[in-house]
Length: 593
Image (cartoon, rainbow, N blue to C red):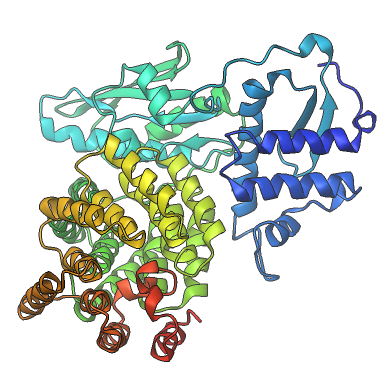
């Protein structure tokens, strides 16, 4: 490339180019990415490029405290990779005719400015429907089970998950999470759909055949742009230790991918620990049932993780899954925190003692330390440690964004973190719901409603998108639409206390006091034989204009450490109570004020 020296470009030309870049669709909704780019460019133009170190950027751009440790918190490295990728996509699409280049050399946070020669400039193409995939992005699709026994599919799924986990250890690579990849099961040959839906440059597909004591695994690496096979290999092994085989194959494939895709970068491949095939079978089933967040699914997930622990008490993954199942049941108002959260904490601690470097275990404990124990700083430390251990763990970004940053009022960080989760797991309905939920907490109700509608276009059976959209409509005073959405979700999930509480609140706000009273009575009846969160009663009393009764129930919720009450600092449903001294006392008790 023929380029002028950096000194030959005027400062104004660089500033104008940066603003042009930030006005593009790739950047316009990413406030923190814009802040990142502006800061490093301003520092460079001021002659302070040598000062652009990870610590300075973490403090100045990402609002980290003075105690920030880049070795523990990878936020700058993660966002720098995203920034390089977006700049590359911009210059390959709308910016193809731009004369000023703004680039970052890998491994450096100093921007480089250069001029394109006339021969290099190209007419601007039509803007693409979405950013072009970075070539170092990959989806590992579920390996096809070709064995005679259909139950062997859990081995092929286990191999797929092991490969995903292994590939996340490669630097400068984005790996699509299991939940999104699994939704394309049976469509492994539809390369165009894989490229479009997951926005990846490469896909790893394969098959598994078990016949008696022998195992054959075939794997292919495919360029999604043209369907060309970049690499293919067949592995024949004896079926003696299935987890040793999974790890061996993962290492062999990753070694090849390292050469094919990342220029020979060093690879630190860490196994998540061995377990029995029965325990891993139950673990995978638990993950599957828990993903939908329905009452039945969450309870079945708990049963699966209990079976996993029973099958192998030494499995850190099984204990982490058990901790998450317990915590989410309480968070969704389906289990009593007095009974279940001590069990969740014990399971998370057991997982950490068995597997100290297991990212899943750190996230399990982080969720408990935040929402249940209100030790917010320690929760953040655990989340960031999990991401340092596994930068490709989408659920860690999801919970850190929606259940920590958002609930503590750090909305900009919340949105950026959830966007990273979506980049890793683009088809996950629950993660996309987390982004819409964060928008609602930010009082961006129109954007939240549009985001919920987008989820329902691709996943119309996801009840939580309906109920969450109903809550957003209610904040706009659109009570009829709110009730329609809440009832739609209720028809799918059943009479969950949290849904009944929301319907009761909206009914009261809409002037239908009789129905609100009826739902209040229904919840009291439910509470005679099952757990009902106090926030459900509080919301209905609030909808009826009974503030003191609402505060009574909020105080009960706080005293019992109910997980849903942790959202009260930021949730708009509680806005009418914010001026009350009793409400402020609740926030202080939870260390949120």
